[in-house]
Amino acid sequence: MRKTTKLAFAFIALAGAVGTAVYAENIDSANMRERTMMRLNKAMKDNDGTISFDQFSSVMDSRLKKLVADNGGKLTVEQLTAALEKARFEHMARRIIARYDNNGDGTLTTDDIASRDKKLFALLDKNNDGKIKKGELPKGGRFGLHRQWDDEGDDGSMQ
Image (cartoon, rainbow, N blue to C red; front, side, top):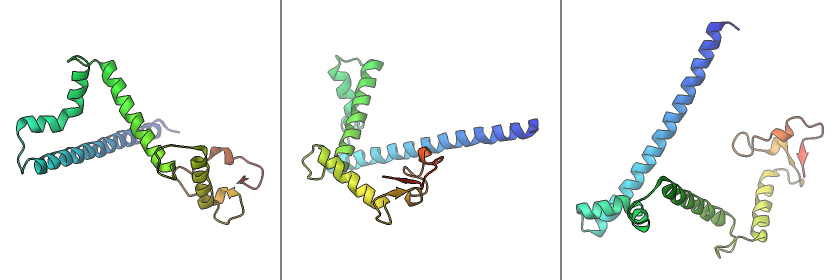
């Protein structure tokens, strides 16, 4: 391959990576703006259509201010990191429980997991033969990328 062709491919790859990062950042910024507007709208409703600076400040950074106060008025990188990780993992745990919890009791059991697995398997087993064949998987997405089925010598099914 010629040097100019290689450089062109490298430039295209770089432009794609930068474009993807910028797109993701724009999505994050839009989500942050939306959450901020929701907080401000709630504060407006709670305060007869006006917000003082103290109310504004409380709405905007209440969790961060609580973290600082809970840590003696100063917050280190390590403390903030731990708090952010805890909040992120708690959010993930709530989503997983909500997704699997059949009876709504807020707990996860092996029966809950098996029930969800059965539902998912039934959705994927389109011909109801008790097997999922590679052709039954959706194209793309989470279930479309199964490398372990790419080089198989059998009929492409998994039991």
